[in-house]
Image (cartoon, rainbow, N blue to C red; front, side):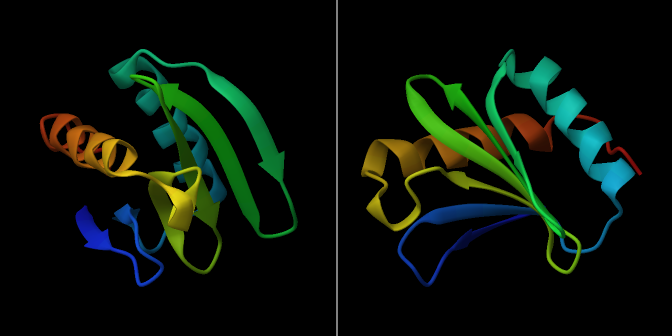
Length: 102
């Protein structure tokens, strides 16, 4: 799990670059428990899922793509403010202290 500063100007957690749909669903279930969140919107298309949630007043997206794996980033992406980007760092610290799902 790595934190990257996306070329588009926002923090992004790369949870895993390679996984299956079932791994995404399992991770999302765990994320819901670990962060005490509810998903407010779930979008699906042919090869991706975008699930949005609120974390300490910041809108966050957990994204799955069959080619890119799982990532977490501010829903506003390039329009995200400093506070939203700080929440991504905070989420990473929480996830680092959780057991691996592998």
